Image 1: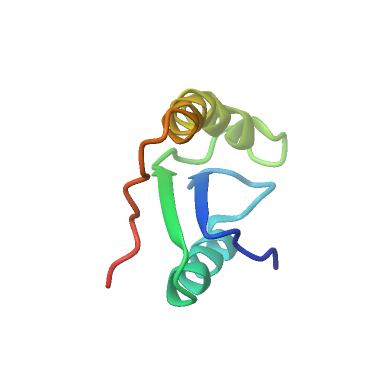
Image 2: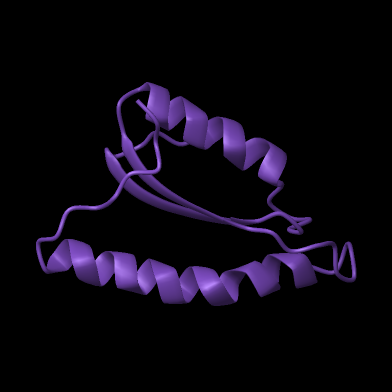
Length: 86
């Protein structure tokens, strides 16, 4: 499991059959528990053409848009809004 750098953006499609949300959720929880600031975007997308990577690809579209916006905000000096609960 990857280590958090402290200020992270994570995006996950629930219909992703390559990178399972059941693994991403605990990773984000672990990072939050360790004190990281995590912006977590979880896209509720049902299974689509399973075992083809379509669910993985569908989740990438909103993730790219939000991820680039998140990066733009970091480079402009704005702090991220963590989704970690205290």
